[in-house]
Picture: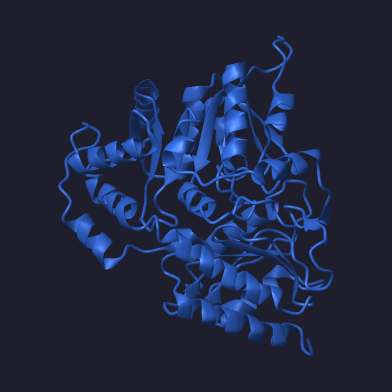
Length: 432
């Protein structure tokens, strides 16, 4: 049984509980291994290569990527750059590395960047903004991790020696801590126009960018609905990121919803033309075992290549890994819509539970399902009870829990998880 200890921390950092969960989970992994038969909904990072992806990896022609002569790596980089309309791309081991490289290239020590206060680069990359680049972050409250152009404009520092120079804006699409929410094309365009007017660089953490692109075709960027609460209906207040009480709407929320109301489907090139750089993860919903891509201009990627070397990101016969990326880009993008549908099924099952077991269910736009445990019910208790049913879920801090759909989750797995939720409800909330 795989134990995840939910944090009861009451600190001010919005992700303190999740980080504690993650550390304790890793520490106990060796003594409490995940059952081979468990259904893993903790993240889309748990996916394993399909037989066809493995076959592509095993048959890939390779060279030495540090020398620049691995043909499969070069093919992957060229394909990704062409898809998004960039001049070049760089294959790296992880999304954290691609994000940190972008920040390093776009900034100078002492600068300030603007991002959401729940952004992955701010919360989950080990303080890399400061450690690697000597840059500080202006972290703004967003609507499920999304910022508006008005928010960004207000956060840009004046040209005064007393203030750090604002040099970079970082967005995330879809949002991780924001529950898979996506930006509308209009919202991204307005921020891009502002950055160009003010001379700022704009980077996108697109770890799950293809999820956002697929969701935009299905109207997932329509005005965000409030959390659904079985007890009180759709007007219930949303939970804070760390689960410590209700979060009051801020002024940006209405403006963002207005932009979303006019959204349109968008594709890779629609996004690529807005950003100076994009980080794209291959090892989440796309199903690769490892790897991320950083895309930008030829000059940007040349500098990024140097930073990758400094960070130890150069790999030798990386074509075996790049082959998985090629397969994923050619076969696993359109199927992300299936993951989104499965997430909707899970959300519906959770919404049908008693409010004593499930207090709130966040609206689902992509493949992330976040909900709040009922009053007096700890996330740890739910996690352990689901573990006992052979279904793995993760904690997000405080009473928040998460389930993520992915290509290793089929209809039967979702049905099994929904049935497990009902059984766990009966155990933890008798008489519900």
